[in-house]
Length: 484
Image (cartoon, rainbow, N blue to C red; front, side):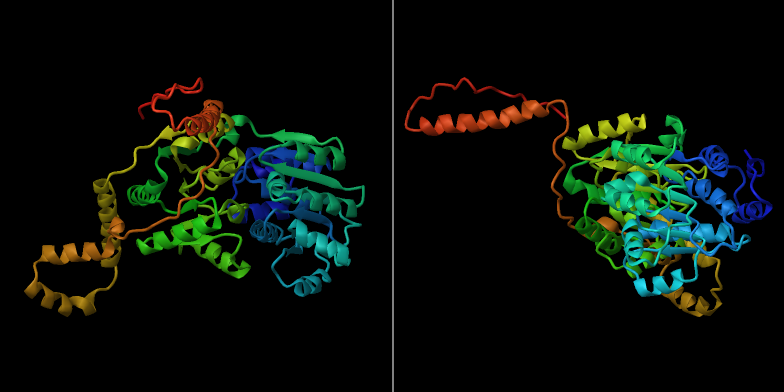
């Protein structure tokens, strides 16, 4: 459906055209008319399906610039997503002259207070900082007409549900509430029951929720094999932009240092980094000055970066919903993406649970060989040579002629390729093993019984250690080891 068919004002349509949007996505097509009618809406769709415009466009249309008060409040789980939402609404509301402000933790609250005195039409913020402003009296929600809870399940995972309930109590009863979430766990449904008035439910079909544009693979590997395999995959697949997910902050730091040591253009983000440093890394990644972003789940929540071609799950997530959010970083705007998940032998149960949620089986992927990886490195180096040859090389000609008197053309070309390519695995990188996820599988009970039985057997053997002949215990049994 065209945006022109959604009863949006000419000023809004002009901004949409300038932003490069052509047709409405399913969540936009179904949500925008309901919001314009003033109805409460629950929208279920994964990140990257156009939810910001789905609530942002009708919110902008309903703004009255003559009112000097907050007319719409948008609550986001992370400062990164809050900033991105503010930027997008500012861009889309430029012709409406809509004033959009963002508040979040980790920034100077006094500066935010001064800006709030200018009475923004739309306020975007994270739960903790919004609640702080409300308690200080620097934000007034008495005139708010629309409240948006974006990425509600993420806010639940991050422990913000109580803050959200407190914020909603500051708002007048007569307002519209919009709730968007990739999943709908019970605490989210309780919020909808408590604070929403007969909401309309917009649910993207399962086939759309499972990200059909993403080819999902898994690599079965031991913990100490994963880093070398990751490097070989990057060499062979040559991603345009890639996100690598690690389970912990230490893991992200070690992966980042390891990738940098092997010559990859990588940087990492996690919760311990300063806000300025995180934003700097994200800006570089967005602008294409970084090839690989390494991140924890929390740091990457709410990332809205187009052009990500590959997602590598170095550590499989314990929560299947996190997997959906992770791979949702790619396969956007109609483009295909690839996700590769590393699975250790005892994590197969987690992978099966993920497959049940996404309704799509991951395809096994054979790790590339050293030879295949080297071919990939040479291919990347050759491309760099092609790029170098496009420049003006006149001032290097005399030096080149001198080298040709001493060496053959082949030797010089080989030396250039050696310099530009990454002989990655010649640099040894040690990644500290993380504690494995608890075993999850159909043989879990049997494994537990085996451990308890062994303890009993050990006690039996200890009590009989002076006997020359031991009678087998009733608990003794043999487990045959299955072949891999």
